[in-house]
Image (tube, rainbow, N blue to C red; front, top):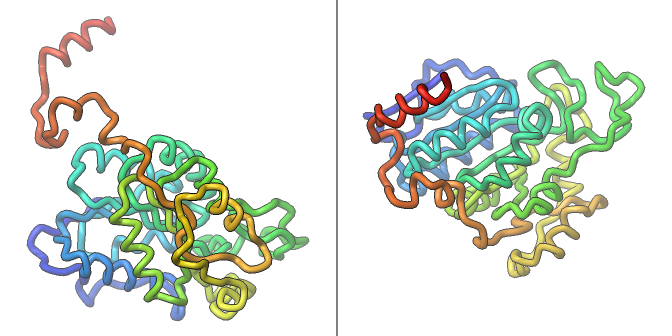
Length: 292
């Protein structure tokens, strides 16, 4: 599904739009935080594209008045990369859940970081599959009992922060939906940062995850020092592997790598966006002929 807003002056959807989230869901503060960031940056709705896959978190683009694309489960990143390469002037944001991005989309995440499109990926991490009634997600803690793991989860949870740092992602951060003011600051910096930005947000599921609640995240997290050297990859990785209390804030940030848009050949000599270019029939016909 693709939505487009070319005359709206803000990011607020009509009141008639029916929200499908449960009361108290951690997706609500994330939705408001993203709206606040976009308004703060004075972006026009037609210049923003939100992309998501499948899941409760993946419904978020439907509740913001801008361009959006809801794709297949785990396939948001290829679409977002395509949007950015076709129109580099777009602010492209992926907003989806931990199951969608780290599970079904795990392989795409790895290679999107390698490719380095200038997009922002916001992952609603509630450590459970909320849409499909509470089975373990890739970030569910070992031993957690769920409807489909009645004897407890036996898999080790993925560490998306450590994974992203190991792949030298240009911007890696973690926020807490229960602290929207700080989350807003982090997301704003992620959007401004050049290159692939990952923001993992702890987002309580009030129905299917009775362990990782708002209070649990408050008690088991802390904010890293803001004046630390975020370009120090070794130190960032050390923080990423902490388990007693989980760090919040910006782990790692640098601008050493070229973006995907800067690296592809067709933008090296011609900066005109792909979507504005006409079809070169001679090249197309030659390509077809060569396959016969």
